[in-house]
Image 1 (cartoon, rainbow, N blue to C red):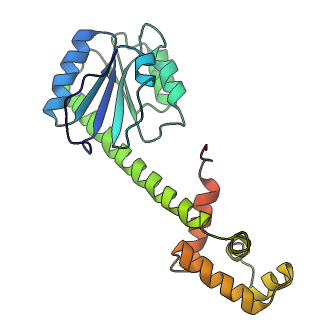
Image 2: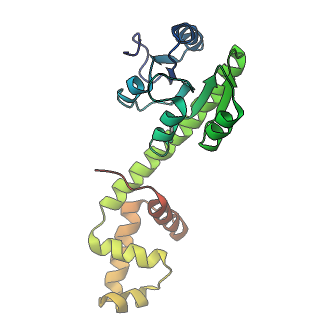
Image 3: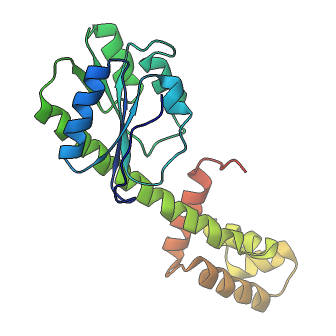
Length: 216
């Protein structure tokens, strides 16, 4: 199935709905539009996975019981790859094991049909705010990686030793260069990384080290 869309503002948050019940999709479409968000409606997990990613705040309202790949399996498939898209799980059965599994896998909310519209709207609002924050962190990390990529191999060596707490004279001895050269490289590292202090440079290095590897 192809998502049903109009021509909204491209910056408007997107609410994806994956549910094989057409009456649920149509009802949620009206509710989502009423809240001034963009609905993207799918009748299967495979249809949802085939869509391109959109760089706007988004969330997924996901039914557990789907005809092909079930909702919990789709949730598992998205784990780690879309931290910017929180998941709200819905079901008409509300079994306890399914609830526990969904919440342990990171679902933001678990609602049993029929659910109150206000409760769902509150959950979507919270999910979109979480998505907005995640995208901001992603943009910040991309900018940080771009700055780091601008460093020469020698500047990266210097940066690593600086954040490890090495003094200029120690770095000079380790790399067999003059202390004046070390100071010059440190200045370039500071400017290119836009670090206002040593503490900020250390935080940047920690962010880069902890961030997941980006696939080419």
